[in-house]
Image 1 (cartoon, one colour):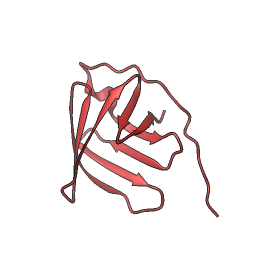
Image 2 (cartoon, one colour):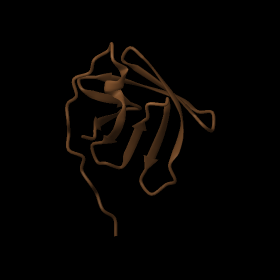
Image 3 (cartoon, helix red, strand yellow):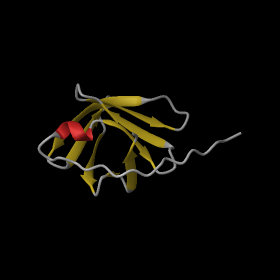
Image 4 (cartoon, one colour):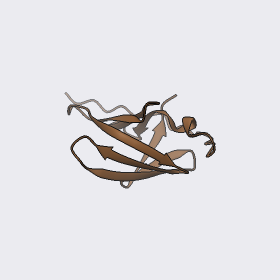
Length: 94
């Protein structure tokens, strides 16, 4: 049986001079994909029932760039209180 969990859509007021406001867990609207940005510069990505993957990230202004452990590179942007990445919108889990 498959379950669908819908993430409560939240709005976060970002402080571009304080990158710690970007830290924490972010989930897609359907809750299928999540990213956890950790204070030590690492991240964990979870997608459904697949094993979690991770790597390192860097925040510059409102942009976040990721370097996965397997060498993949991707980017996202914080805007309007949300994380926009790869055509998806992520909401901060409170």
